Length: 112
Image (tube, rainbow, N blue to C red; front, side, top):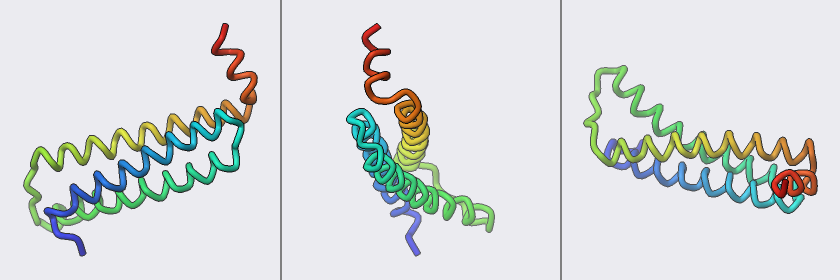
């Protein structure tokens, strides 16, 4: 089990990885490498789930009556997690668009 002091660092670590994988997936999709994009999105989802696991530890501890001290680091960690989730969801939507209209269609739409 992770100590309460380590949890924000774990959330930041896994959230950062999730965001990086999601951005990597977008780059693959832009190049028409949809299989690679899906693989990177799978990694992003795993990383978000791992970060969420640590967040859940804090919530469960509080539900048991173990109060968590709110620190700037914990707030920063939560911010990282929420940003990672948002980027992952948006990346997924963009990848779906690339699948629907194709890479060339997306590039042409950006030029107009």
